[in-house]
Image 1 (cartoon, one colour):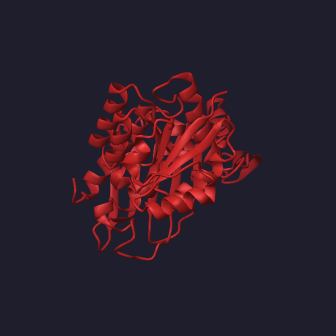
Image 2 (cartoon, rainbow, N blue to C red):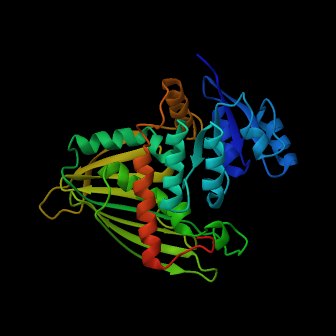
Image 3 (cartoon, one colour):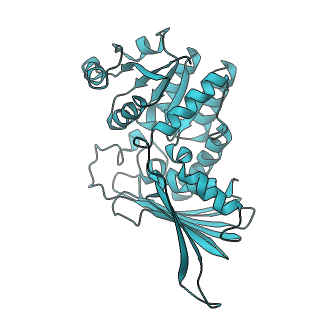
Length: 334
């Protein structure tokens, strides 16, 4: 089996987690890393035993030994950096969100197709084994007809105008960074795009959204009530509600467990009986699953993953564009 040689662009916090997982994936190796600061790249190389490091992004992208690049920079820069990689013939796994808006995303898909190069958005939640079990429970009718999805992702990050979450010049705000997760879970469950989106938000002093609520209605009648925020910690869980039961997913964006509940006794019972818990701890830290999928796709000669299609990314980005339009959030570079 050919070893897939990886490069990491932008060695920040998430890149360290990614590299840790990569070291445990069979048939994959960290070949090189690049940063705007060569000293950071060198330090990352030593920490994670990469073969080499690059003086800058351009040098890494031009490396003929490299098979695929993981882009871990702030999403403000994703479109430009992804296009540079694709145009150089390098496969790309880009951290979520793939771009800032749908227009940028379409340019990425067009470039991947034009240059016949693999591209995938790194929404790690989609690849976690627990969602295979959740999807089976839903498809097998374990909770009957699904009527509603509830998911909340709120964290408390003290305001700092320079922090990426609060900086409009970096496409900050709760929606793109955190809201993508509840939207993704709703997409996994419904397997379709909503036909109606309604949103409201609280914009903070820097102008980005600090609390956003969304209601998505789907053609099959399911209603998803989703929220995200950066100034208060929420329940951080997801409920999938059916007329014959429910499914609870704690820590849903990095889920390792889910519980199936059967209906309680009585027509109007509020009890949740007969719990069936499924525990599927990560092999490493959760990033290993998307790495394995990219390796599989590259070996199969695919342009996109059937588990994370371009259409999946397109549909989520369209939702976030719609939400931003409704809440009046536009970034200065758009």
